[in-house]
Length: 290
Ligand code: 13P
Image 1 (cartoon, helix red, strand yellow):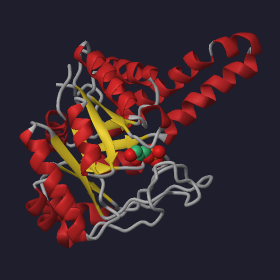
Image 2: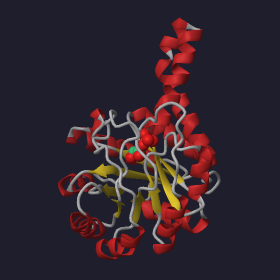
Image 3: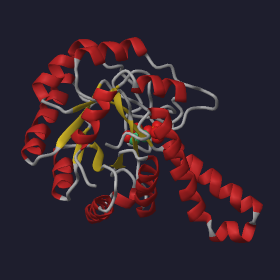
């Protein structure tokens, strides 16, 4: 069933678990993400990010949202279609027009006052259209500064817990993405980031709204499992899912060159789906669809 993000995340915050938001990079990833959610009886949030080529053009973004919505309507578990990292007011307005179920405005790299101003404006319009809004306070940078696929600045700034209440009050935002040691993209080999749980505790105590962790890949199962019991309700994951898809596809290719090649995309999708199911267990959303 197609739902808004509030339906999914308010329940998650109340019950203390996290819901995965996979970054979707093809039509098939829409299908396998929902298949994973149905198999695990979990909600899922489909993230679309316009820095990825397949939805860079407006008409492609509109089509992707349409397909995702139609697939979600036919699903037996709650599915939300979300715009990830909306870069400005106009970009978010287009997503609303195209039928997204929720939107993120990312003005995290701007000054506090600018972030408040743009987030407030987006919330006013999105709320009037019946949509909920995610914004980012503090700035989640890239794990590897040379890897800038998300188009984000490489710098990282931790969320200041002392301005959380003011930000939420002045913007009326529904969900808050925070920076507590997490980072986007692949980490250098064997590095597991240090999450600042003390900071997470302070932020969660300051606001009852659902919190979001970007850069879920490579963050460590134990770290993420713990964060999900402390107020993190949505975890964005991109890199780990693609990595697992590529691994499964290459393994099959190496085992059987002929069939491995024919089934390359199918095998990629299997790896992608398996990793989503794995993370649903880690984040605690398995069995919690309703
Ligand atoms: P990762 O690629 O690090 O999982 O980050 C994804 C993300 O946060 C998308 O918003």
